[in-house]
Image 1 (cartoon, rainbow, N blue to C red):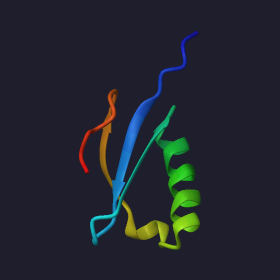
Image 2: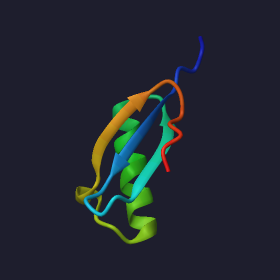
Image 3: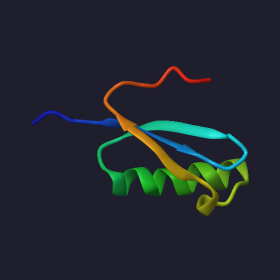
Image 4: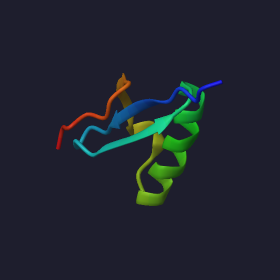
Length: 59
């Protein structure tokens, strides 16, 4: 069985974007919580921006 991962992109109101691969939206939300905590931003500030099979090239 293949491991089908998608890229999940989240953005906060100031334009800070975090993007990473996850196997499900539930897993993405858990990762978002940890990454937001690591950079000192509330996880509630980040909203889902996109889900895609390929990594976005946005800066």
